[in-house]
Image (cartoon, rainbow, N blue to C red; front, side, top):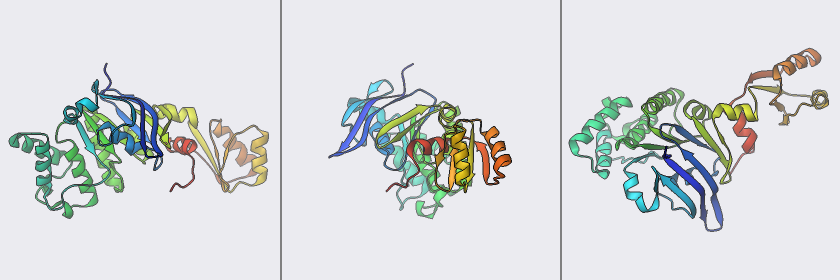
Length: 303
């Protein structure tokens, strides 16, 4: 089966700065593929190359089996893009914003209205069709941007942090809608800072940092590989406890006021620490994608 997206050795430089270097991946039809990484990792630059906004410095990029650059105009008709910004026209109503965007794809007026009505209902905006964009709440604005990205019935939907700054209720609503679209066979490329979102939505994902690929795989497999099913957190550890862990051969991340222990029989260790040290500040929990992310990219604040 021909991949929907096939990226090989993508590189993008801005003067002396390399934003993306030697990034390769593929996306097959019907899957949700995630790009994860800290701020400045190169995620947005990568996806902007995918829909032709940013030209490649080097590498090769195919969409639907065709080279991107010579076929860009044609391929754009098959792509939907939800950017980070809510960049709709503030002087137009909800309905007017979608009608104007439909014209960019040469959608006949009657067909456009049918699609718009369906999308407004799908994203629970049908009762706000006459409202100005500026009168919408933050969550409604985000849902409208998502609706706009689907107006052309795309074969590939590119989502750049689609639920950024949304409240938990609205985020859950958006997840439900995206899962419905995925069940219908839509191929999705997602960037997000929400690890739960990536775990819930993505079939496979790629974690990158400083423009380079760190790992790629299924969320559950990455958790098993890098942190294990269980994680033990120890708050306020003293030196005796540290010495005990070292003497028993346990590897741990020392964060100063907290220890993180991965890839061990954490339940057995949890019982031993409580028994030997009477240490009450231990928490045994399931490993998460966030643990993988922090283990691979670090915990330091980025500029």
